[in-house]
Length: 254
Image 1: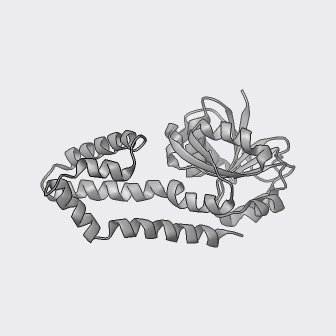
Image 2: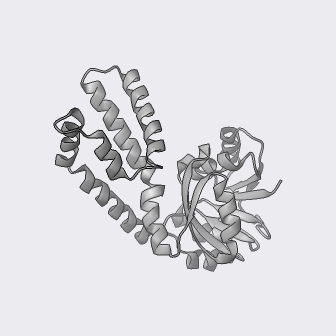
Image 3: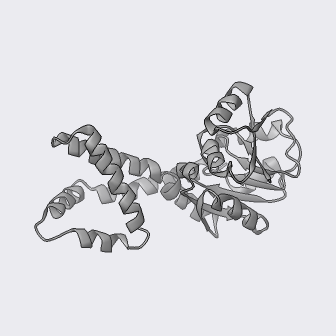
């Protein structure tokens, strides 16, 4: 079984490791053993744990999942050159990763939290040399899409990477609306979850506009609710959310 080395033991690293643990041997590198023990417990599987100081990444396939602002500090603690560095750091360009870590190849990626259940939509870009291996690894936690430029992955980060937070807000708001009208909280949550589960299947096969038109009937309940969303500028707010997240990704570039 091949080994994947995680540098960093936060939420995103754990989500990816959850998706990979049945297919790869996992080793994780962090700042203190207490947090590494927590990572192992939450993963639910035995892993090899190492402290970051002077850890040798030579000839390893590394998934870098530290905070973007800690890139330089972390790079100074590690030794050697990785075969492949897969970064999940928003906004940190390939040239910066090469400058600090000097791996043989670099791939930037942006998975999301659905990696933990094998349903991530992960976008990638970087060195062609590392494309095939990175794609195989990240296909193990969902779907992948290789993009040609780093600008494109910054835009995709705003959509696929940040998207679960946007959809969580919408899901919560819809359930709250049902509760406000008198539906029991547990029934509202169950209905909302069923809605999103079915919608997830439908959107794979249908354009959003066609799906919408298929539900809305003239003068009906859906038309009334949809009109309220348009009045509330939900469409414009979603587009602005992507714009602002993209601008933030660019600002994070080092």
